[in-house]
Length: 89
Image: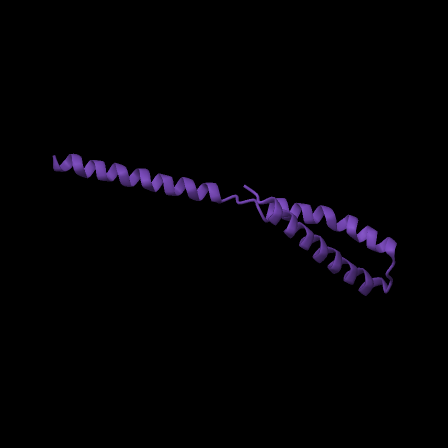
């Protein structure tokens, strides 16, 4: 489960980092800065911060696969142990 406080914390940090990075890029290429540019940069950075936080940072595509592999190994170990016990009898 996602900790909402942590989610918001990283989202805000992501927005600040994205906005700062974009403002540097805009200023470096145009030599201009205004409030209009700031608002545009914020609007552009928000969706990327959301995508980054919800999908990239919290999506674990191989987590379930690892669990299944470990469960399979446990089942196989139990079967082998049961076969060994049957062979001894």
